[in-house]
Amino acid sequence: MEITIRRATSDDAEAISAVWEVVCAERVYTAINRAFTPRQEREYIATLSDREGIFVAEVKGQVVGFQSLDLWAKYTDSFDHVGVMGTIILPKWRREGVGRRLAEHTLDFARANGYEKMVIYVRGGNARGRAFYRSLGFAPKGVLAQQVKIDGQYEDEVFMELFL
Image 1 (cartoon, rainbow, N blue to C red):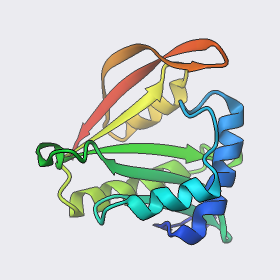
Image 2 (image 1 turned 90 degrees about the vertical axis):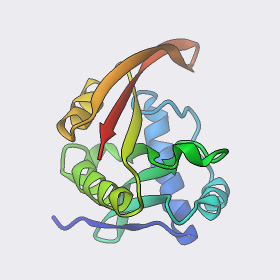
Image 3 (image 1 turned 45 degrees about the vertical axis):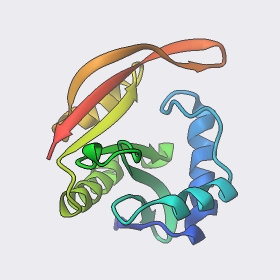
Image 4 (image 1 turned 120 degrees about the horizontal axis):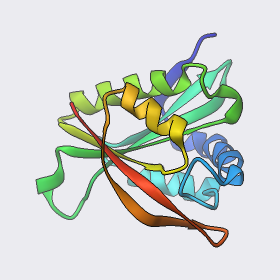
């Protein structure tokens, strides 16, 4: 199976939104409880600096997942060395190497753009997600209690970091 990774453009907004729809409906793997609309995705992509991006994974021309890279904070340059990642993959494509390929691409991009550290938040109940990030070298740094509230249910988030 050939997986193509590339930087998303505004033309990918519909496909990214469709992935959000599926994963948000699962209510398990992301703290985002409502999918972003194509319009919201286009607006978000337009706000990203040259050092940020959404990277899509395609199989046979279909977007099957994506990974975002954002600056930790934009209000001061003292955090310019820190990035925040997020990973969203369609259920059918999990455990098929898509996440690893996305991470390799995103981390290479981060290194090439002056990042020294990456941060990720993973829902406490997402043991496979935490294991995946540990396999990439991320270390858990703490738990944010009751950080997520979806459908009236609280869940912790695990804060993890990776020094590049």
